[in-house]
Length: 357
Ligand SMILES: Nc1ncnc2c1ncn2[C@@H]1O[C@H](COP(=O)(O)OP(=O)(O)OP(=O)(O)O)[C@@H](O)[C@H]1O
Image 1 (cartoon, helix red, strand yellow):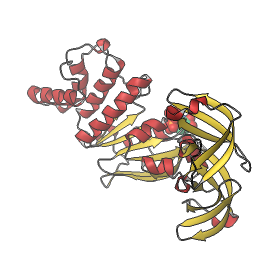
Image 2 (cartoon, rainbow, N blue to C red; image 1 turned 180 degrees about the vertical axis):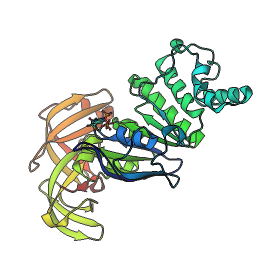
Image 3 (cartoon, rainbow, N blue to C red; image 1 turned 90 degrees about the horizontal axis):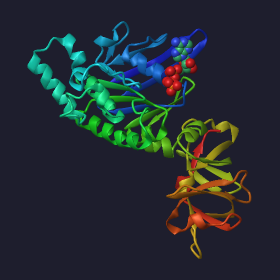
Image 4 (cartoon, rainbow, N blue to C red; image 1 turned 135 degrees about the vertical axis):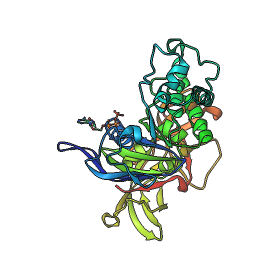
């Protein structure tokens, strides 16, 4: 288990990390997600022991890490530029870190073979580093870290150099690998899809602060504020007036959706009387022909963008301050709806999320 307790990292007056606290559980796939410069690499490097907190403490398995150098920590890091040695073959690259353990030759070979099998590179041990694809090089870098049998594997944007298709394939593989070896993975990424696809839990960070720590579904469906909602994908925002409060819920009124009961936002100051209501574009559904729904709004299509499997519609609704974005699959012909056409949209009130303003 990793505990980050009130950790700040300052450079002069600038705080790269500002009083961050979180707990990463044993065996968890945990991601640090946020835009460039939010402090995620800074936090990862401090867990690894490559950097030191200005204030606060980092504990691994209950032990304070202050003063313990990187090579004495139960962690191992896989870097973005997967720094494998070009003059060594795959086996030599993977076995490199084992040299200082002075194992018996047979034991060393057994561990290298095991690590290569874990990343599905068995049989490629004699290949030169220069004779590998990008995906294979990434696997060598992973094997090189796994061979040290760390309790925690730290990954700094490990897939960012790969093209989209390979990256998606490696995301699945990395997740399987983590489940089969059962060790804790901490991943730094600025790619929300990557974090959502792979993680047990995600810490979303902005400007050196941790905004939310939750499961992928929770951060996506129940973001604590607009910033988190926006970073994790498209979101329609509607300003709402708070007209009632109940246990764990609030009742809000909007000109467009009327009165709805919503889960009470976690970061919420009830005094100011207003909140923001959000709904994801894919939670609005086009109603065709005579179809009706209990909850629906009507408007006009003002723009349309075709993306192959889906179409993105922009819909103006009387009473709404901004047009709604709608993503609809092309199964029923959303790609043929003309701009200017009248349209009705169904929504589930449970898909509306109230956020602090
Ligand atoms: N040695 C340093 N001196 C001064 N400022 C630094 C130093 N290292 C990092 N910073 C600043 O701290 C902030 C956080 O950096 P960090 O590398 O943690 O961001 P990040 O979220 O990992 O971003 P990226 O995805 O671009 O790597 C940035 O504004 C960066 O410029």
